[in-house]
Amino acid sequence: MSIYIGNLNYEITQEDLQEVFTDYGTVTRVHLPTDRETGRVRGFAFVEMEDETDEERAIEELDGAEWMDRRLRVNKAKPRQDKRSSSGGRQSFGRSRSRDF
Image (cartoon, rainbow, N blue to C red; front, side):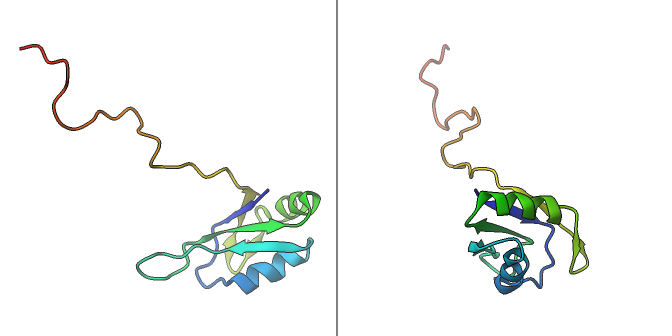
């Protein structure tokens, strides 16, 4: 399972997140996405922990907590959706095969 942490302060570092979540158990991975163009932190992160019970406890205790002048949103991360494969019912460009004139 992966934990989603939202509404993070833009000054946050991976080390900051590692330190906070280590209070709840062994952290196996911290991912702090950055903007491709600016390199600036995007305000959310993902943390994975060794034990699911520790993850659940961290979620329960940190969701809604105030940290670095921000109220955190902490919950189970949703599986990533592949945006390329979801056409959303869009029609293809070009000529339609069944035109009646």
